[in-house]
Amino acid sequence: MLRSVLWLVLLLSWQVHGQLLQVNNAVTEMALTPFLQVYQAQKSQSWEQLPPQDSALWRPLERETLALGVHNLWLSFSLSSDQGVINRMLEMDNPLLDEVSLYHLVDGDLVRVMHMGDKLDFASRPMRSTSFLYPFELAPGEVHSFYLKIDSEGSGYLPVTLWAPERYNQVSESTTLFQGIQLGILLALGLFSLFIALASGSFSYSYYAGYVLSMTLLVATVQGLAFRFLWPNTPEVQQWIIPLLLPIVMAFALMFAEKMLQLKHNNIRMLRACRMGAAFSVLMALLSPLVSYGVAIFSEIIALLGISTMLLLFALIQAFKGQKLARLYSLGWIVLLSSAIASSLIYLGMVDTLIPPQTPAMLGLTFEIVYMAAVLAIRYSDERRAKQRIQQQALEQAQRIRLAREESLRQEAESNERLEQMVQERTLELEITLRELNEVNQKLTEQTTIDSLTGVKNRASFDKRLTAEGRISRRQHTPLALLMLDIDHFKRINDRYGHLAGDHTLKVIAANLLQHLKRPTDMVARYGGEEFAVILPATDEEGALAVAEAIRENISQLQLSWNQDSIALSVSIGVSTAIIDSDSHPLLLLEQADKALYRAKNLGRNRVCRYEEQTLQAVSSAP
Image (cartoon, rainbow, N blue to C red):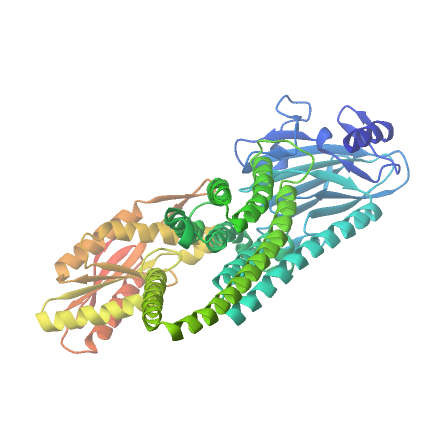
């Protein structure tokens, strides 16, 4: 009904002449999707290179939600007014779009270019809002043309709306109020559960608190509020926070379901499945920064649907067996799963609706979390009454114990057996946790030795290795060779092509160096800036010079391309070789290699120099 009314108002208040929309003051809110023209470019191009509007390459945008991931997608429309000056705001209400470039033309002349998206700082937006807003004025007789270029790895949800400022403020206040109430409820429940968990030591409340708090942060991120208020100056966080949070939420949901359904006592196979699912979710969270955003989101949505279905199946099975909490849990999970499926289908572009893709999930999620809090309270009450019954039975049993000593001894033996079983179970849980913690620590330790840009060893790792190899050389009387390598004219590359090109150059050089190290004992490290160092244990001067010359010649033949430009590369290398005879000798060897390097650069670069006692001799150079 509402959609029909909007279309009726549209037809009565707007006039479409070809692709030119006539705007008046009668309409204060209008979805522009039916009037958008879309062009899918095969590669990145500027707006001047776009085909004419009457070209067959432009076609109407059939729906707001496209498939997951859009690149080089152009939207266009034109506006005009025959009334007085009209103030309007253009809104694209998808806070998770990576890059949005807006080109505003008046009578065919470009008047403004805006670059927005969650890959940029929040302050770069023309208006402080979770959605992307662009204000402008329509003067009588002017033709305003807009071109929007969209690049995003996430949802292809592209709602474009034209607002009167007053109407937008009214709607925005209502939306903000609803979001604030929703996040307030979630945050209050999460903190309350956390305090109960800390006070009581309850695993159930701990997992529930982790589930609610991680879900609250996920909701705030999806709504764009987290980017606006928590990390507005670090858009890098915005790029990986959702793929990280989704599996964390799944892990907490699995552990909470394990406690809620009491699988440890009811079904060991289901318990193992939940724990394997939680471990898989944690693994997905750890791997999410290593894959593209689109791949991570698509994989996690599929995993979310699978895990949700599995938990619902477990709950229904336990409910049919007569478990009270399982019946209550099933109802909440059915609502959440239904809303999650609806949002996933909208998010993946399989279902076309007027509502945003996150709306069904947000509504279902709020209901599920509040409902689960009630179920958890019921479980706590049931456990409390059960404990009271146990206490009463213990009193009665104590009276019977005084009458029958043998019965007392039997009860004591059973109690000790149950206690030992509980200790074994807790010990197993602790061993699993310690094993997982040890694996994470090993991964973190490995990361501290690697240069994050090039993937080779860092300076700290190089210093430790040089000291160690020096001691081996001293003990075994074997030569130790050291190569110091510097990229020629690296500053010129940064200044001319930009620092991204410089970073790419460093990665290419590092990869090339790794290809020339054939032995497992050889090591390449980024020494600093554009300098690399290579350690060659048990290598004499002739062998070190041969390796250095091979590296120099191979790099000089590289043809590095950047933005359709070819970058010529060359390196200067200093070589020093010696049998280490003292603890300070490795540092002297490093100093000698450095001197040889600077000698190579002073002789004209793109050459190899070796260090000798009284002279530095160039052994090779560019042809």
